Length: 186
Image: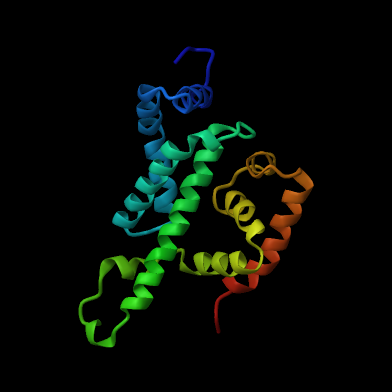
């Protein structure tokens, strides 16, 4: 890395080379983004093995779908979106498995994979996002990128490919839908 370039610039260059078929660039790129991807997945999935599974899925998606990266936003923002989507997808799979496997006769020894979903620290948020996704799917990604991962409105607009005002409106409206779902139950 040169003194005048930032790590983000280097990721973008590696991403371009990887998208062009350079296998060494792809290996380097995946090695560099792996810690960030894992950190993002761990922020959503409290059980380590679940987060690692989601991170592996995200890395596979990055490798196989790198050609879909359009360059509208920074490569690290795109990676952030891929990782967040992978974590949410893994959560939904685990939830379906937990619901299908729910059998009172097996309650004496809980499975840590389903316990992660049932007792996870982010369960209320994930449930609220699922509710939002059913009614207004276009609002989920902007809300997650802003309120969970702290990206700027400008970065989100670039990533989603929508005007800044539209992004601000979607986030505002999404918060209105999600807020009552996150309030403590009496």
